[in-house]
Image (tube, rainbow, N blue to C red):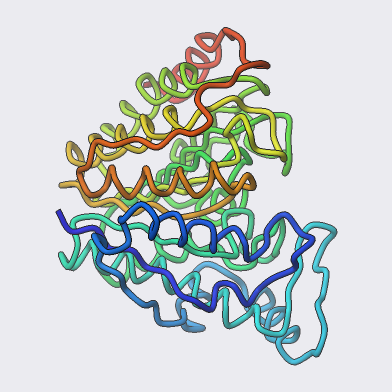
Length: 344
């Protein structure tokens, strides 16, 4: 089993140390992969920066120009109260998008069986024309569009289980029947999107599926959603490639959210994704780094994804299950509503 890992040392240059989305996040992941002896087992690939053409396939000219303008300044700019950019951020975000493109290329061209893109800044909140939520370019959207155009795939599925709704990814593909976007997220919560009735429009109606969860849901809820919604929706869509936007901010130790997933629960999700990919798209799957702000949960979680991709059975879970705050919550009503809306 060959697993590509696409990352770049320049991902530390986009940095605001007092911000939750700081360079220490990716440094923690790199260090954990090295300490676990996993880095040497991965096919390490260096990304090329995403081109203007690749970026403009999903973003507007104005969106890109905003980053170009900031690159010519000599100071940090707060694009909104949550989102910063530095003069180097255009180059770094090009590399992040390029890493996703490189991971897609490796899998689609057969250089790797599967892949992981360890990147920052994250991307799933970046809409077609707006940087927001720590995100500058929408890495997963750029990768999906590249897969459809460069590799001439017919259908791509994006599963997003960051704790926040992937509003940018949804925005970009809302009317596109070639992309199935499925998000499991805390609601109500930032960015305030991702309701049940957001299902896509025009030719893309039905290819956006949202599972908004109240705070406090744990491993069991996510597993049941996966089994009863994700599996049948994906089997019906029959994607040629699966892309997974992973945020470890639904972990119970994360300081920014209120979900109660454990690392064992996250591992179950990753392995279930792998099993599903083998059934529907010959195992072609790429995992992409989005959020996660407890460094231990984030770094050990990515070690577990690497093990799953490599076919290793070991699990690292220094935290264990949530010791408080988790409770048995009724999830079946939500599942039944989603299944009824989408006919699955």
